[in-house]
Length: 212
Image (cartoon, rainbow, N blue to C red; front, side, top):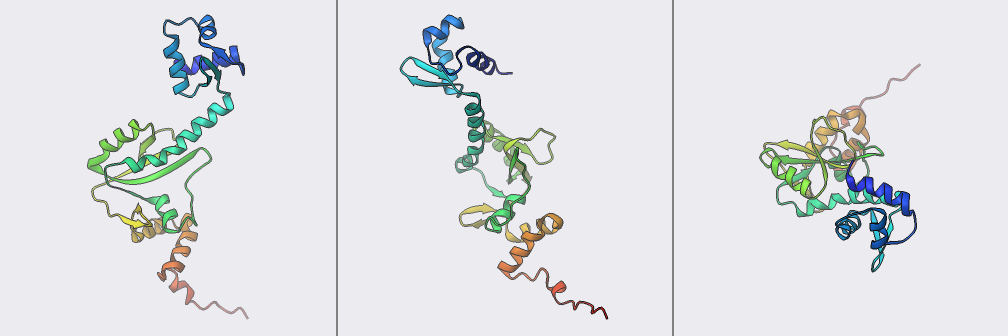
């Protein structure tokens, strides 16, 4: 467990919702670098600066909510990326269906599927780590939680644009849906109706048997 996280627990135990000063902090928690520790605790979200020289411990519920909020905000980091990518799999389905169909997530795991070039894999790992974003390579054995980038390395990327968003082409997205038809049947029906793809024509022309 992170040392500051342990200290946060003790800060809440000692001060609770009461404000405290640097001097009060140092009288309870002897430290040769009290100012730096306080600065770090404020930076990391454990404390709030109420006014000059006075601090308060972030309430546990607020602190936990901030962790989740910060993690969910990591979707914006892609705006800073300098390598080619395309939303794929579940995310491509959501994009091509105009947000009509979305699946593949749980209450505690919000994957963002990206196709990236195999040769750029190290760049993406470094980039996401630098931006404190969770990531995993497709198929990697790892505990998954929160907003996590799932990297799908490929030799070549074909990128389409849907309202300015880089995404795998519609044809590839439809193929993905077909390979997982039990899950993505509603998405296929939506795409078929919107783009007049004729995906279900062979079924529509079957005359139902009349039972005497």
